[in-house]
Structures are given as C-alpha cells and as structure tokens.
Length: 96
Image 1: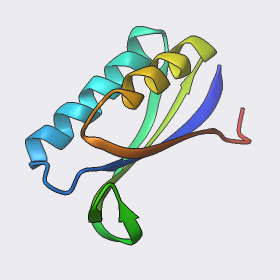
Image 2: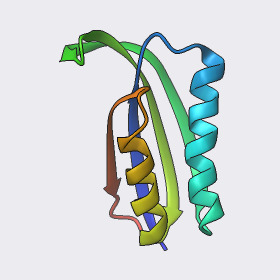
Image 3: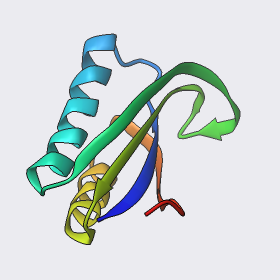
Image 4: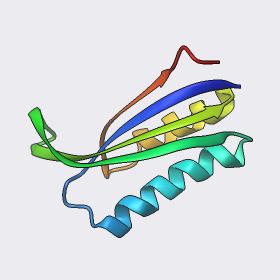
C-alpha cells in the first residue's frame, strides 16, 4: 500500500453536517477497499486566491491515507461527479 494525500476544496455554502457526511463518504470508499485512514485535517473556510466556479471562499479538508490503486481510482471517480466538491487534488506522497 502507498501513502496518499487528498486535498478537497468544498463549496462554502455547505453546513458542517454536510461536510462531515462528504468526508465520511470519502473515507468509506478508502476503507471498504482495504485502505487505512491516517489523518483527517479540516482547515475550515478560507479565502481563495482566485474564483473557482464563481466562489471566492471554500472549505478545505486534507485526508491522508494508505491504499492501493483500486481505492484511489474509485475516490477520483466519485469526487469528479460530486457537485459539492469544487476542486480536489490526490497525490502520492514520498512516504511508503
């Protein structure tokens, strides 16, 4: 298994419960495919450097996890079709 870092930029209009539900759904994808969640870091609402989909603010969340390629492919697929996600970045870290 490799270590990955997922940064999510979520819509600023989301309530705290909706943010938690989206995080839970994403972590469920990883854990259902034998992955391990290492850390979930909610940065909160931040001002953006430039507009993203007509938003000047966004809610940032960083999730660090260990998983195989199957889990990352599914996370990528699901986040691409989730309307609440403005942007996301999934990178493999140097740690093994």
